[in-house]
Amino acid sequence: MQVVYKLGHEQTINREFGNLLAVNDQYPKYVVTMDEFWKDDIEGIKRLHINDFLLKEV
Image (cartoon, rainbow, N blue to C red; front, side, top):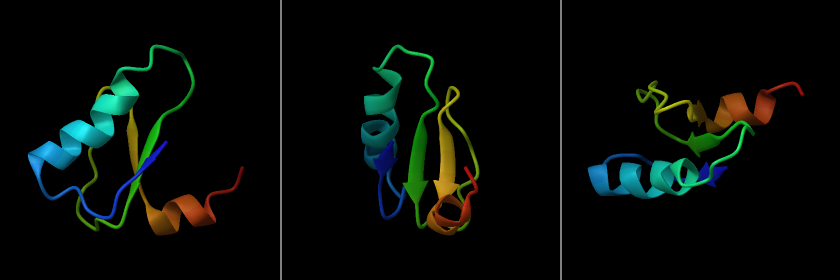
């Protein structure tokens, strides 16, 4: 899991998602942000808004 305030720059996206892409396992991977409009997953890594993450039932 990576946590970032906003994914406003390509460098930030590459840093946050790239770290998780480098891990070669079958566990779910998430990037948690405050972005309202970012909805895309990248290569199976899910992007979650902080509210959705905090309210998610396990």
